[in-house]
Length: 96
Image (cartoon, rainbow, N blue to C red; front, side):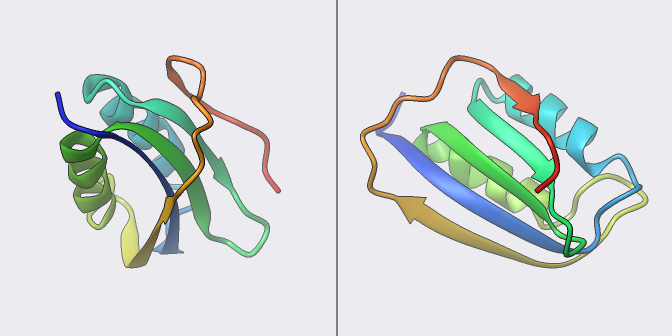
């Protein structure tokens, strides 16, 4: 299964208004990850992802492409050292 890790992703480019969050929820759910994804007022998308290291790495790689209408410029990934366990499941949350 692998070590459980937590990672915050910030995705920039044309990532709002193209179904990115719904796509991310579907991919994260398929990979068995927990966490959330949201739009940011600066036009980026942010996600907090938790699960087995290989699955988190896979989602991070997938986020570099995104759904068909997205044009991803960059994905910043920052591992968290927190021992906080996120609730099971992955969802969209409010914009910040």
